[in-house]
Length: 220
Image 1 (cartoon, rainbow, N blue to C red):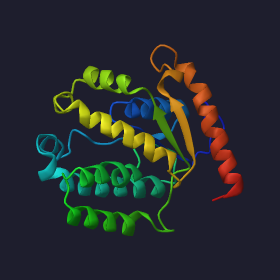
Image 2 (cartoon, rainbow, N blue to C red; image 1 turned 30 degrees about the vertical axis):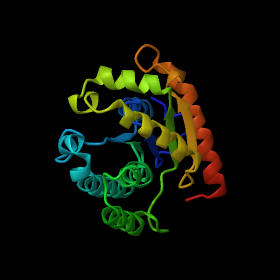
Image 3 (tube, helix red, strand yellow; image 1 turned 135 degrees about the horizontal axis):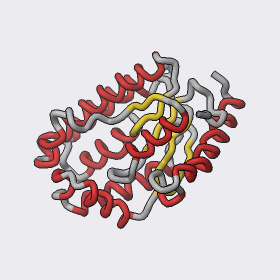
């Protein structure tokens, strides 16, 4: 097994809207590079089902839960010395999910302010370790909806499609302004994990080039 020249202490984060295939790519890249995984734990989330039934009641609780879990995962990855592929970044929550709920009135101004201040205190400091690269998964909106239907989670399938459309657009706007770490944009049609695993090689080469370039300018 080869790691394609990617540093063994690298932390690679995968971002993208719900249903785009983050978890699947996380596992595939980790296997190919012999890295550990950091997977979002959906099944044991005590707020997720409640949230999908009542956005206004549970959006703040859900975001606080995610912030705590992602912060703990971030610490764990760097305490291990890197070598991780991470499913979803800590940055998406405040700029996409929490902000969307604040703007559409399903999170109060006070709750959003409290959440944002906590996020900034935890994350927006020179001491918070950033990923080496963020992979942003791109696709058409229609592909997202088909993937959500195929995945078949009731809480997602029964959600108003307008929610997914707003979320999709927010991701598109967010990545255009994301500056926390280097970004690699990857269209989900560039690879086929199941029928052609070698199609991941060009994606891995993109990742390597970005990490090498960034570390040459800002070595750890």
